[in-house]
Length: 239
Image 1 (cartoon, rainbow, N blue to C red):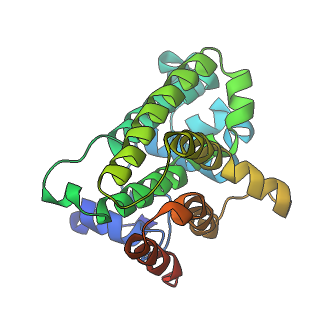
Image 2: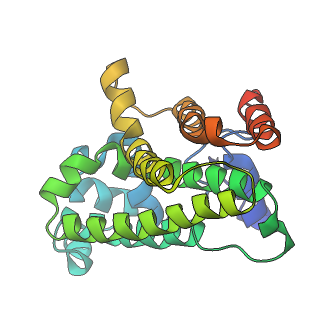
């Protein structure tokens, strides 16, 4: 969304306009001022994919010379690593323990779900091309492996808390399998849609379908009240 009115732009307006369920499902809110490097890189990568975007494209979007861009980044792989730092930080923040009275509500689980898929949409260039990026970007595979392990530990803790709260019935073995399957679905969902639908572009409807498939992993383990709550959420029509 491009808004040529910086005086009315607020974080809340950006969230409402770009919300994939209640807004237009945009990449972000761009104000009518020179875009910063992060926004420019994200927009280009999300639109065309990391492999289709060169440093020359990025420099042109930033309205700087390629030489100025090379002053900060030696190559495109360094740019990917820079963006990956944001991916790590955001995902770990999303999965961090939540405190307060709301943390005792099953709504917290639904917020985890919504936030995780919002993260996938924001950084879809990465998850769409994750296998090739892990192969081509030096040092990324090791960092991604470490992130996957931290996410596994935190995800398992969330599922454990659902059992403790008597929202879900599951054995330790079932929770181990659920944790692994959840990571596989989240990180490979876009690849699956591209393969099955024979298309390159990722659409906002892919996010909603991903939520439905993710819910199908653990919904059979939920107690009846929680299962009905999840079913109502999934059944809500897209905005």
